[in-house]
Image (cartoon, rainbow, N blue to C red; front, side):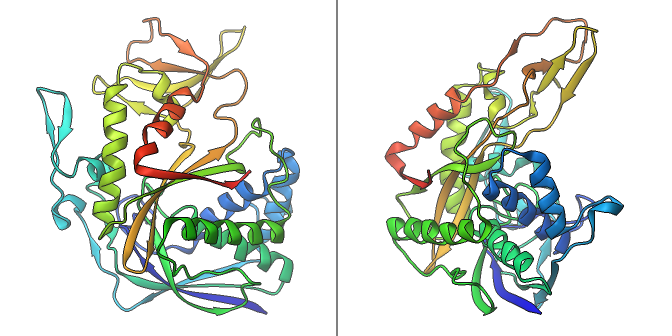
Length: 366
């Protein structure tokens, strides 16, 4: 049997649990992210073939799709420090100001990115655990190793992992890695990116992935992958996340009049009048199909190395919506007309360019 054990540390609060309230380390949560990054790295235009191959490795929900060839176990190392109020535990300074209809305070950035989970139970940064991945099937095991690396260094785990929560670092490695380096111990931005690029290429070679460069692949993928990494380093996750969160918050505030355009940052977009931005497809028969959720193509990511934190923005490729869907306002009063627009990435391009002075851009996969 092939086995890999990673000794890990949580570097930003992790919101992982079964019911959205209690916090725990769940193997299914880790496997779910591995499946996502496996698909992203494969970048296969043939969705049916992709699904069949994924199910052969990780298992499917239907009887004829087979069981998972991958076993994942999570073991806490020592006691997990679980808390209930992020704002209180970390003394985050932000508040809602009625006059400006906005949030204010020195921690607006981290408050804005993690606002929806402020009152959820979470596992504190600094807690340690180990991930054990094993399989009797070497090819499936290789796929799992590659997708686990991508989950750790391009993404995160649990709720709000695309907004900086649930990031981890690897402190020790036992077992088979097939040459993929799981321990980041480099302190300069360009060297960090070179390390990421080198190991991503190893993962892709192991998966035979990211062949296509077609921007119209129907799901999030890395067929073209660019990132921005902060020029400055930070002392802790709060400082790092607050820095990039502030820049994102100020950009969104400046563009808050672009009610529909900002939908490409992720759906839904909620407004204080209880209206929300969603996607809809209308048929000639009058039938409507609504999409209430679509993940952001931008991932806010923290990297920890040599006692320093850097923020990364990772920009995924792929179509934001299926053909025929338009972004619109799902109003409380259905009889009110609402504008509809096709999704485009001009506003994301503008945000990306606004960070030029504070970060370096790199092509990780092109």
